[in-house]
Image 1 (spheres, one colour):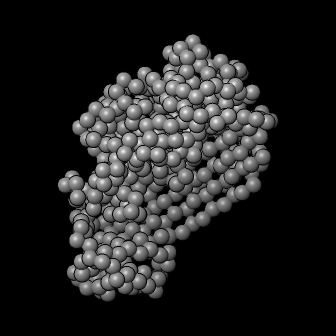
Image 2 (image 1 turned 120 degrees about the vertical axis):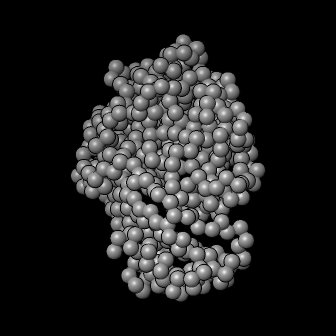
Image 3 (image 1 turned 60 degrees about the vertical axis):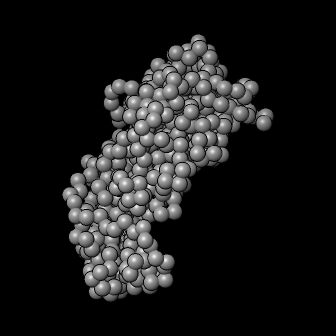
Length: 467
């Protein structure tokens, strides 16, 4: 059976077992995921999994319950419907049930690359080999992964949708005795992952980060590379542009207000990359502008939060949204001008050696305007201190450099920071936006963050290596 056949069979079983008045929606996803992982410059793990997941949500007699399973034969589907129905009868009434997505056309989705969907392990291994060769004897670690998903949706209101998607990603670290350099890239096609270019960049950053100096905490002008900007986008997604958090007044977002610098435009754009064209409720996924030239334009909604807000769904239904809220998961910070990062176009970092070679040309153009500040590669271990103002604390990693008169002059030991992300990108705070965005992978395939480098007027570093 196709995924659409399975979804339709689940909906028909609900009619038979729960009665014609029961409302049901079924999502069926077939996934083929593969990962090649390396450490100590050797591949040590090559794994793959293939499976089908069925998710059912049912509303019967004013009560709502959801269930899931992976058995798609007649007995497995019947058992899924029976246990979901039993759960619904035990649930409390659900007066805020928003109803089902009505029949509507769903686009086919992003361009699908079959070569990526059916990539062999040796194709991923070749990119790992290129990365390891490019680091020139440094210790290398990381992964190369490919993912293929095909799926379908059906509900008892007569709506259906289907689609398929493929994605590839690579994340690698080059390490000297006391410093690391990182390079990451996520793409719709495995052919667009250049292991040699990524390895060259990671190695250049690692070599340029040797023997760092310690600087005092304080507010510094910064240039954030795309990996660091991705952390901003991720936290904006989880805590800022989340419709549930907005309804609960736990979000900083104030639609219609100029909360950001005019240089900032944020768009959740799932069909720009490898994502199915419908959400878990069958709603069409399309581009949603969240910030338009500095003005907050809206937040993400599923059917429930959209009904409460009086705006309807924006195509952001997801498993667990009733608890965690609907989140934009393909967030793009639009560049100052011009196109996407082309295959292999990761800059020339490392080709001339020295600290001044750590930045790709797009980042270097922003660094050139900094009189005294810091170039930051990456953030990690970020945690929310104040969700309303989105104050985040975290650490730098994988390279920080002091910039003097437009040139990175020396590596700096890692900092702890405490910063309000909206404030850091607020009116007058963004001094420059790069021209070439890079797509950064998330832990989950189909989720990614795309941004160019940013030059910000100030970033609040609250602790150094000594405390």
